[in-house]
Image (tube, rainbow, N blue to C red):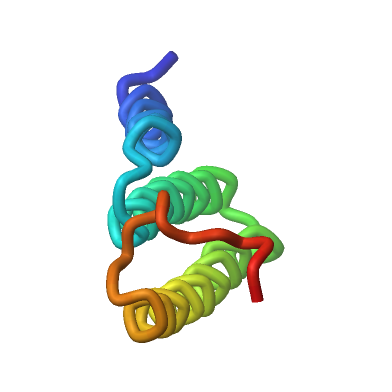
Length: 98
């Protein structure tokens, strides 16, 4: 495995491990998701540059657009949760309760 591929794979894996093992606050979970999306964006951008094809060049921008939508939705949920529950602890949230 090339060192660049190893660095992006390890960045994605660290973000995934942070998401699974660090479930204290909603903000830390959102930051782990953003780190995973950033590593995927950089990997896809370098992959598109490596193939030098016009068809692959739009894929990283599409991923970046979805990442921005995901971030805005996550921050909106964080604000709504902090207003209704008073905290962003994930253990205090009951998803089955309306």
